[in-house]
Image (tube, rainbow, N blue to C red; front, side, top):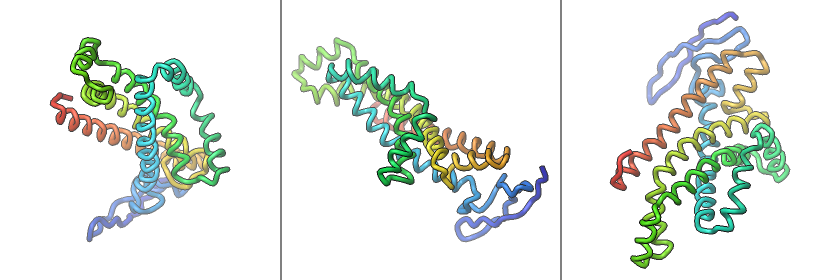
Length: 245
């Protein structure tokens, strides 16, 4: 492979800085390009992150709602929880094209199908973690709340929810990483022109090994950053509750 060096001008703020950009003889992006260019990994990472965050928020809300229902309604514990576990036995590579086709037939394209795939992957750890967390208070603590004539809502907000905080953030760290995986996988069957999944796919088509590895490296950096943000939120919330992370 012949590597040539070509300078690009990247404007930051009011000034510009010349950064080296490297191209193979196939014309593939390797190191740096204008940030707003469609060859830039920063541009593709922004596309993937938008779907990741959307799916992560949807999956977190769904997982928490399912956990609350399972803990408070025994019928859901017996009927719904086994199906939640069984849903994760279906390979995401098999179900992703089905989701894309079904939503496409309904005229839904773009960000939402990728977000739904991310939601499908990330709701599970949140639901399981929150079920464990909401059930973590000891029997003595629950009996004490009954002694104080606390309502179910008061017991939830003053005992169950604070007890589940650590479990929630541990689950969210896993969920945000799996949400990123779902967003990347969701870009593969759609033939997307933008996103880290699209870079992986085009790199495999044209034999651009460096493009594939650079997209994987960027995905790893994005995953570390997202998990770090969740960890920072955990520290702030726990400090506000008077606990240590």
